[in-house]
Image 1 (cartoon, rainbow, N blue to C red):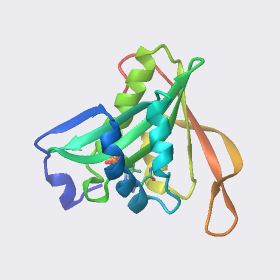
Image 2: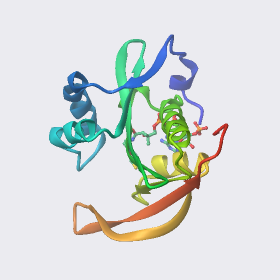
Image 3: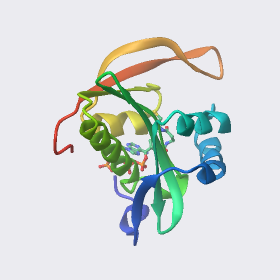
Image 4: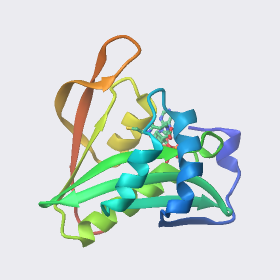
Length: 162
Ligand SMILES: CC(C)(COP(=O)(O)OP(=O)(O)OC[C@H]1O[C@@H](n2cnc3c(N)ncnc32)[C@H](O)[C@@H]1OP(=O)(O)O)[C@@H](O)C(=O)NCCC(=O)NCCS
């Protein structure tokens, strides 16, 4: 993709653990990004139960986040979202690689996630990171009319993730 946005370099990109104090900003980003956003309570629950919750700060501004659960040899990427004005500059890829690396260090052998087939940007992102479709969950997502299926994607975790 070539865009003016891509030509602007960030001075500092920092991936760090998410804190309770971040949740109000995260909920704002979530509401602008998704038609059916997670509630504030879901983010607080993710922190409470100890999921791997990370934010990406862009020049000191909270630019996005990623959330993953790990257990029984598997990682599940539950949410990845980048603030609209910071998209298409490689931030989601950085966040995902960070999460996958954490999962590998924690001894997980593979990672799974669900994506709406209509979400082209996310589908391309995941496939570019080596995820491949292994199934479909029928009617998994809320939709404007009825429900939408989810594609289930998987990738094997190895050292030196790319
Ligand atoms: C999907 C999303 C997280 C991508 O974030 P991003 O920071 O813009 O993505 P990146 O810049 O890291 O892009 C990495 C790759 O993803 C793909 N991609 C990202 N945005 C894309 C777009 N608008 N169109 C097509 N491909 C896209 C490309 O393959 C890209 O690689 P390239 O730059 O070499 O072409 C972002 O659009 C977003 O937050 N969307 C709303 C929330 C969402 O849908 N999350 C996923 C739920 S499953």
